[in-house]
Length: 119
Picture 1 (tube, rainbow, N blue to C red):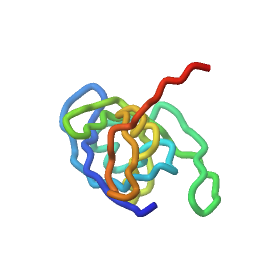
Picture 2: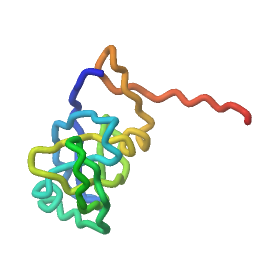
Picture 3: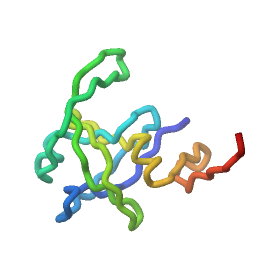
């Protein structure tokens, strides 16, 4: 699948200012990953540390907090990983909370279709 980017807003879960940032959509990332400095400037605090497997097969321990993500007029409080300064990744849990899926042909986010089937 080709790489594409979308703008999101990120803010403190309790309200206040929202910073608009360009993120790469990364369905391989469990959580949204944003730079430590950005999250600290928004007064988002870590609430736990989690082991993270990165693309070069290293296992690291990164801090995770809760951030208010805004996308197309909707907002959810989502897990956000305190990542390196150059990483702006929109991860799978955020996409799921917003009920979004990736359209790889059009390189855009689309409403996810959920089909209920009996067991």
